[in-house]
Length: 342
Image (cartoon, rainbow, N blue to C red; front, side, top):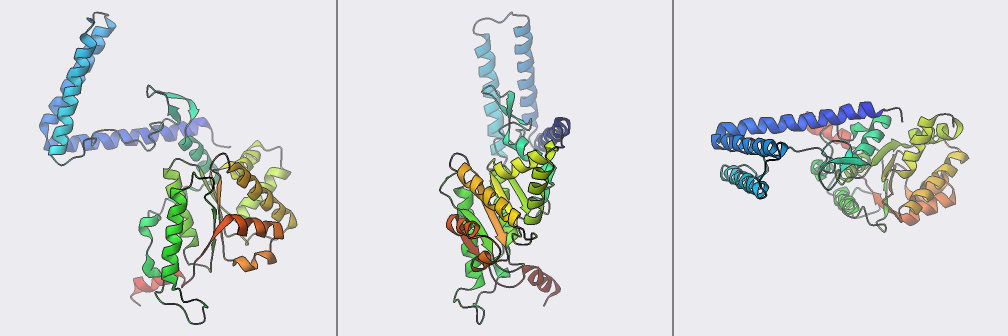
């Protein structure tokens, strides 16, 4: 990877600083509304300092540690009660780290709450994000299942569509399938997903919704358009002097959720289709022991896959993927018409 630990460390420092700043802002708010809590915090701090001083001087009586701990515990419980009584959550003054597994240090905490030497999942994910620049997964603030709007889909079947299911009903079914995928992600028998349908019906949006939820569960996610993915694989194989390219290929192979968008838009090549089969086979085998799921998104319909890919590729997709078909109007145009009042 071309991202050094020093760069990542700065990011983790920034996350910790932001978490502490946010806590301090909440503390100021609470102190204004409930001054007694400020007094309690001062008492807790003074007791902690007293205990530390006595411990350093080694002048602690055998039962002193228990005395200090009990007194501090009573003050903390009093503080929590005051918070709740005044409409705040009991943990309102705790630091809310982005990642609770490592407290934004990048390394998993040991039993004493101290960062060890094992990289946290968020460290691995940050490496992937920095290299592939996929932070756009959550940058627009409008991606997530809570932003899914069924009203963008017509509530009645289109004439000549060959189905009596409305686009809205189908979209709701697909959303439920996506949520099931998230909830059962760690289950090796949970099938991969294959989104299909015309341009603009929400395939990429729902893929990214899944990605965000899987990130929250502590897994690594890699989102790549098909042409970019095949290009990375090609450069990794034929520019083998580049460690960076080799690492990037390994990420494609091993990331816990791989989303390949716009499948079918890559330039046709027998070698590429062989690489696709190898990739799908590898990830399928790896999924037996550890989560290694794949989501494919394409404008191609399942019946047209054989026109572009080999029988073995098509068999792998149709045999191991839930086919999620979306149809309806182009949501980008629907949004524009709704905004303009049409």
